[in-house]
Length: 482
Image 1 (cartoon, rainbow, N blue to C red):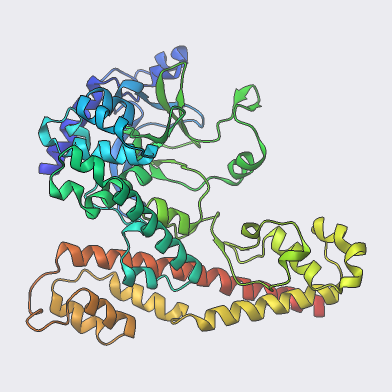
Image 2 (cartoon, rainbow, N blue to C red; image 1 turned 120 degrees about the horizontal axis):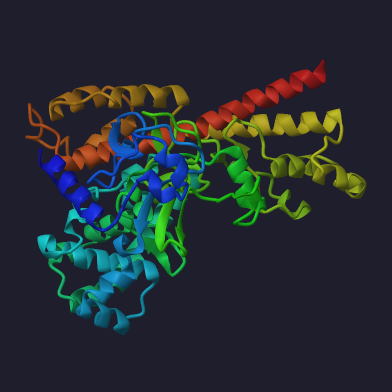
């Protein structure tokens, strides 16, 4: 009831600021006027979108209340309704003066400004909006050492440790301004900084005048959809504003438009009434989604798996290292396959076959089998060296999906599983004397459990890409051997 009241208060507040999903803002008035269902309402939503809950697809999100054609403007948020460092400082002289005294990045400034605003409580003009922020985030920088190690893969562990260290450095270098602004101890803590950083990382949207981006009320209710294949191509090879059939093709579904002085959101595809309306934030692997947004996709067309490659391979070609990967489907990337074919060719023949490699063409049957056998062996080796198998991980995830009622129930289930399960109990203090019985799980333990599940889920997806690559290599070898 309390959350519903806060949401209602927020929606009224957003409406007074001019946030609107009215189809009349699309500019195609004649078409819209012919539809009697499109009437003005006192709420900022209801003409094109409504808030709904999608338990298996991102939780709270936006739902189409009518059929929405691809490319139609479906939400407009005026610049005055955007929360930015600029307008937070313009309404707080002390904050503005303090920021001018310190050398801070744009992201640090917005982080400090956000914590400063939250510290005002109900006195903040932004309070109705701030009540809609989550109380915690599952971004990589919020992972503890147990959760980081649960990722298992060296590249992922390194990314998590790097994210944590970067966030700590930004926090430490901003302690001076937080002390000058007389932040309460809670808002000066690293825990609070992690929360604010998570808010910025997962909720802000790009604006041309501030590298930290902006918070966009209502606009940040959209859940994520991975870019479609043609959108990925567009991001790599086309310039913004390219026209297709006389219409501008945008590289994102939401963009700040100077002519409207507002953030405008467009339907990324054709939606039917009742569909969840999604927003593409850009092209991300699952590890990047986990790092910046705190979630992953079970089926992500942009996911990649990196494996150790021969040390002498990189000196033979000009492909960037990050282009040498296994695709989400298990196939080697174009660059990886080309580089591997060159590597598997005797040095004396490199000059004569290099053009074939760079064209993506096979060199010979023998060469192709050598490449596939090496990839198959390497993927098997990587999987073998990881501490758990796909089957063990999936069994663990099945167990962890259970709604645990008490600490004793968690103990009884996890103690009989892997060493990792026992370590979870230990690091969360659930093995200490006197802890157990019918006592329920604390919020801290529940959050730790969710992050552990995310780590397991991520490593399962990584392992399945390697497993699928093994199957791909076997198929190619068998076809070539016939």
